[in-house]
Image (cartoon, rainbow, N blue to C red; front, side, top):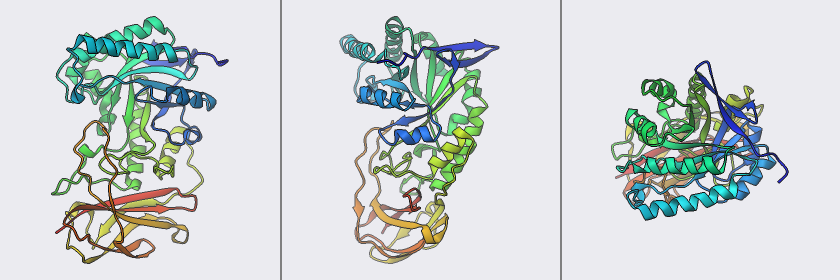
Amino acid sequence: MSAQVSKMEILKKDGKFQLLKNGEPFLIKGAGYVGNRMDRLVEAGGNSLRTWSCDDAQQILDEALERGLSVLLGLDLGRERRGFDYGDKAAVEKQFNRLKEDVLKYKDHPALIMWGIGNELDLNYSNHNAWTAVNDISKMIHELDPNHLTLTVTAEIDRERVDLLKKMAPDIDMLGINSFRGSRTLYERLSAYKWDKPYLLTEWGSNGWWERPATSWNACLEPPSGLKKDVLIDRYKEIQESFGYCLGTYVFLWGQKQEKTPTWYSLFTREGEETEIINAIQTMWTQHTPDESVPNVTGISINGLAPDDNIHLESGKQYDTIVNVSYDENHAVYEWKILEESKAHNEGGDFEPDLHEIKGLVERKEGNTAVIKAPAEPGPYRLYVSVYNQKRKHGFANCPFYVK
């Protein structure tokens, strides 16, 4: 491989931190990556991507290198909430040896910049020895790979976790934090907790589903894409004020996943069609708004009721629905569908099955309005609407309802 291995360093000057890549300042503008549209990440002004494991690492690293992107490569550690026991010395040693093989395999790849040692090991855990395992892996990496930096990623942060990390994992170079609503206050909180190293915002975006209101039957209320876009723009402006302590960000998620809904974190559809939120990200990273207009969706209602009105419908009856959108009506394509509500109670982004679509219930469509028929079976459902431009870029909204 002819390209140069990236030498990564952290410069501390006047009480602030700066990430250096081969001696040059490098501010991370990145995304959590699950296999969608790497070229679009470059076009949007991104310079890095994050993985959560070494699955498909060679392909991802090679493709990133071809496009001039850097990679924060994840090392997947066992989680206590999934049954891993950090009191089991044999299991911890086996894990250490497995990850050592990954480090030796990928440490000289030119696209690599950092190692992410575990993701959210602190979620619903009790055995603090997880941080000792992180520290041992970090020391191993520093011995084998002097060119790249190490971090571990927590699910949010508080004083207790900072104290534990300072005591039990002092070898890591920085801290990665997954934070959504709390991202704007991270620097103030870390300063209060006396964290004395830099940090990365390793997952961020509009509020997580656990941070949002819910219906009386506990269906989380997802904002429409237009409101999500506005939140991202405002939030990034606040995050920028902490640059010098925060070394950059990875927006969540450059791809598609099912978590409560198919759209909550997804910046793309499964087919690779992008949402209006991508335009906002490109504006943030490049300070230039893309020329192409994408439908801006700001609301949805059923029978005149908004999603937070705890909408109850009667089985088999018809109801008028409206989606609020700013776009040239003559060039918009509306797609409506009704899915069963998610029954998953997973945490930490664990796998959720796709939701079942109830077909034949959208009876009349005209522009931004449609008539739907309530499903025959009682229970929770959700109406989804996507509004596409001619290039299949879209805004979206959804509305939960309960059939009596």
